[in-house]
Image (tube, rainbow, N blue to C red; front, side, top):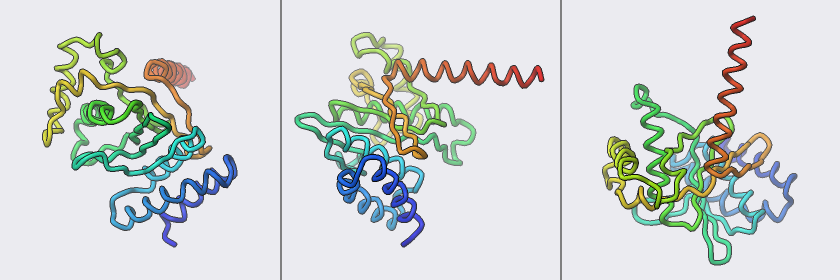
Length: 223
């Protein structure tokens, strides 16, 4: 057994302790698929364990779940769930910035999140972003609004940002206009726990965290 398999199985064991054997059994296909992709050097452990925790949460909520699910010739989503007539897609965002974007990390991450919301939400009734508690997802403000309230200037701005990094194919104005972000899933791997926040709730959560951080820094300065 390689280290990847060992680590994923440790997380699955924690999930079993918390949710029971039935959930573990339903995770078997996800586990096998991720191991196969790891052997092909297509996934990394930090991303994969978050997928497993997120998949378990959806299974508990009654979804049938697949990981690294192919949507079309171009797009493969991280987590795909089906329940009744509805489906859900969750894209994991760890906040990783590749070395080639060391000088433009904020713009790069903003474009990556915007492109995910614009591209993937068209394939699901519910689209969400999963992220660890230590990362702050840059959700473009335009996606906090319903499509009817988005201005032309806001849409064009997101389009310009996305075009800096995504051109094959480019993100379209229509995709940006119609995109919907249903939820932010804060994935705590340590506790194998997922917390759901609406985009507005997440925005307020981040603001509160920044206020607490600034207050803490101020107390250190005084000391």
